Length: 562
Image (cartoon, rainbow, N blue to C red; front, side, top):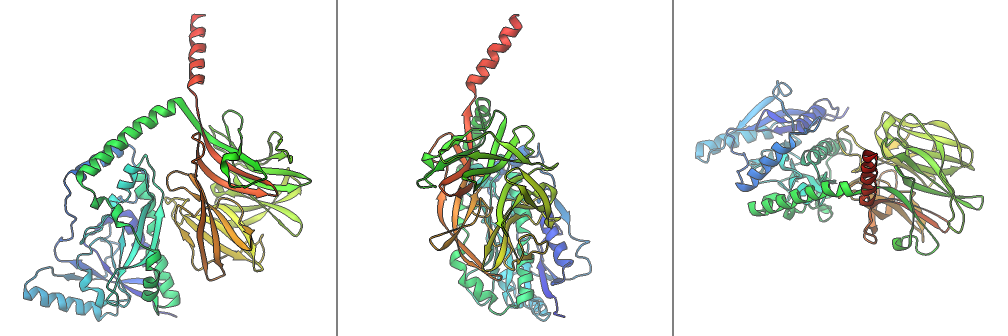
């Protein structure tokens, strides 16, 4: 049996955020790593410097948001003293005189003698340069673009992005080693911004990045460390954080300006909600360039209902558009179908599948001359398959492909005699479901034994992760539609070319982006589906309701007069 990886933990305070506490619990309970030594600085020299006006604004913002606290906030403070009791602790002196230098060298030599594989620095990075020689695979630390030269502060993460409502929040797991001059990126990810809550933005992102260290440690444990640092070095050009986006590079004046603009935007948003409303609609085009959005025709649902997630099937000389239908109030979705002829004339929707839990994203595929439907059933923590008894309106339960999993928008694809299942999965219940795409394989699309891909999640980027329709072939190439939810859920669409798809590798690149910039009433795109000459998308449609409010007011006044 392979020995566990030996971890040294650099920690400057027993009181740590909940996400870091959860990370340590996972490592301590794992079969691939153990925490063998604690490393503490002698003095609290790693404290981040105060930043004047910027900090004052930040503190005021936090007090304002505490009126509506986040449940299970990743930044809730927890004590790690009991958790780490019994682990040897080595205190590193921080003085500059000769006696301190000698003692520091002796303590570092003691760490080196324990054959440590990785040193994990949670917050204090002031002394990591002196520790890089005391471990095999470098000192690992998180970089949120919110770092000073001595301290990384997770509480600020997403603050600037919330004020500016973008770009996506970025974080990376970095490695500093003796072999390379520059810090190496071991893992990188991008998350969405909750423009109305910094606490939500921060918490969702931190619960997600908690998984970075276990993922890389598992990979190191299974595959060994040969070439690990070299691999990080080779991937450096594709995995760089943009430190120019950091609020640490902003003056207090810039933070103040951003805060004022943000406050005005919140007021404008509140006012606009009184005079407009938005909901999902379908749009279609027959013939021509299926992605020339300006020529798509709107299909508006009835009042107080929305339509989303279209999937097109051509059968019996007609198009059948399966989609999610739900009332605006309940948001409890079911699957419906609309029949359309070659001229674009379409029927009223017919409900074809309903369950006690929410259904959406009706992925339909054919296997052995039989059609199957896999709706999104994340609310039930399952991936379910339904067999067609009578097309298009009779479907019976076939079986559960996965259970006890928060999986969203499952998309199947057959390639090289293997069935592949793509789905967005969040490892932590408080993490976003928009950010990370996982991949599984099986010889049978109805199997309940899907094998996870060793690179999971194969995509960790809110801009391209979540599926947005069927994967398709065109001109000998494979394309995967995906969502861009970096600014808001369902903001835009991408088409990524799949470059590698095997049981050990996966690689894709975005080749086209579709944004809601051709019609001021369209503010989001979500799913793309095409069959034959018909292409269908869904879109967030915003309409003014001022006239309707005026009519209601007049009606109310007339009633009072009577």
